[in-house]
Length: 173
Image 1 (cartoon, rainbow, N blue to C red):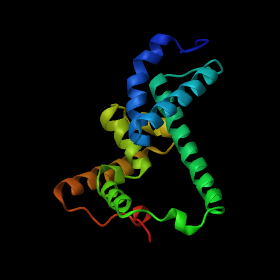
Image 2: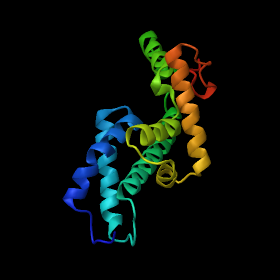
Image 3: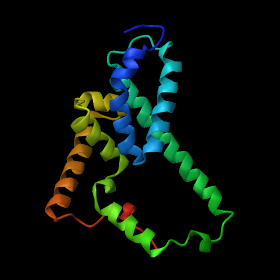
Image 4: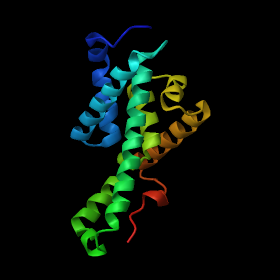
């Protein structure tokens, strides 16, 4: 498809899917709206330079995912810089915050964002594995293994046989 820009019709058709994907990535409605807006802004500016794109939806999911990953990296850098100027007492969490964090990690939200993104693109958005690989710029085998791990973890959680939480997701004292 070669055009000078995205049409309103094209955007309206894919907007609910983009918002749903962004909402599951960010777990925050306001953050999801911001992510969709910045992703569409990037898509609108880049679309004119795009020579050939077979699947607009895959391309837009790819932009959204990259915007999310870039935002997460910026947030981590910002928190590291902020920690240089704050004392440890200012970071003490309340017992309620700790219980909430543990509960979130125990459920669906505990899936790593890469697994969560793949599961959503395949199960909710109906993309084929190859399309997901293109959208996230990862090998097809990686898509299949991450999807398998995500499904297995969700199944184990539902059955109450979940393995211990991944150490990278564990709350540290």
